[in-house]
Image 1 (cartoon, rainbow, N blue to C red):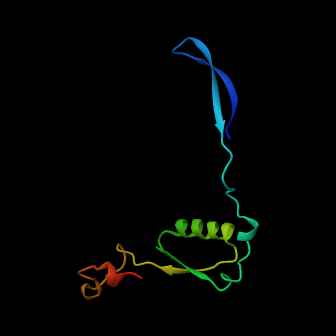
Image 2 (cartoon, rainbow, N blue to C red):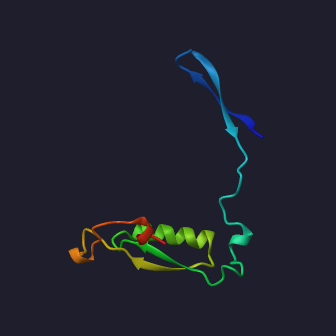
Length: 107
């Protein structure tokens, strides 16, 4: 179901005539705010916790993610886990994998 409404009548300089701007309003499939059921953990999720992986030098990203989690799933406990930083950390060659096999290197 679409609904159309005019937002304003403005002049069109190319046609030298007024034109009507229309805006289509579609109903959202779901709200962007947390559902009532999302604000409390169900029994199956009650003990769930999350690791928030990120760079220490990017606190803005960490804050954004923490704010989003607090809004969407306030019951979820999240712990920050420091990511390896290629600009700051020296990773020894013997700790770097030379090959990758998806069957062996993923869950």
